[in-house]
Amino acid sequence: MKSLIDILDFTVEEIDELLVVANDIIANPKKYSEMCHGKKLATLFFEPSTRTRLSFEAAMYELGGNVLGFSEAGSSSSAKGESVADTAKMISCYADIIAMRHPKEGAPLVAAQNASIPVINAGDGGHNHPTQTLTDLLTINREKGRFENLKIGFCGDLKFGRTVHSLINAMSRYEGNTIYLISPTELKLPDYVKNDVLIKKNIKYVETQSLDEVMPELDILYMTRVQRERFFNEEEYLRLKDRYILVPEKLENAKEDLIIMHPLPRVNEISVKVDEDNRACYFRQALYGKYIRMALILKLLKEAGTI
Image 1 (cartoon, rainbow, N blue to C red):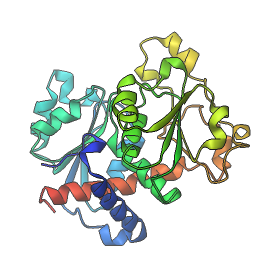
Image 2 (cartoon, rainbow, N blue to C red):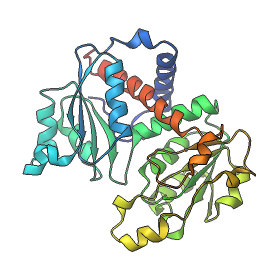
Image 3 (tube, rainbow, N blue to C red):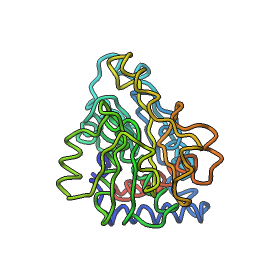
Image 4 (cartoon, rainbow, N blue to C red):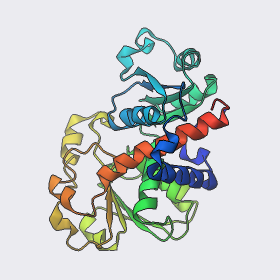
């Protein structure tokens, strides 16, 4: 049973196929409006989400399917002590495909190992967020037209930012990219990502604490939120949360064709004044998320033989 737990579960060719389908959905939405008629997506969200959960729901509805599920752990039987494995087995009786978000790393993998239907990891702790990565790839595809020879700056929380870890993994498969890691020392990219991806694959990277210093170099700036929910120490969170704030003045030396991305939600790391800049594409990015999730649902249901 094919599931998506890690972005590396899909080959470059499979991702290319998803991008082709997503672009076709954008161009021909009516063609896809009944492809999941009679099918059900279960959204099992054990921690809060707005964009990811709603984009999955919108994706299934726009494919003509239905949605069931819950949006917080307290609404599920996990509050009574039910295991992820048992939840996955039980939901397999009621739905055709699962999208799961869980605060514990590895929980969606456990679900996939026990479910009899496809499972999509919608975010597990600070580990992985592969559908956000697919969203990011579709954004880069539509906004830049290529995945090679790009200078990509990741700014903010690189330690807990699962979207950052997943996208670095994905972009490591393409030639000629340079990764700029912009963060305070306390929120640096974990060594395991640096060693297993950047160093192992001989990818050029630059570590710096200064966004201003590297801004003129960048083709893509990927801003991230400092995530309060990942901190054990409130004082440390408060000290670091406003370290990087993108304002229009900081873009004066940036490339005209820079694209500014953000997985959202933002707090105050990007000024609302930046929204007016043509280079800001984070709300378009959120829209692309719906289309790539439609393509993903179709792929997994087809491979499961249910559509």
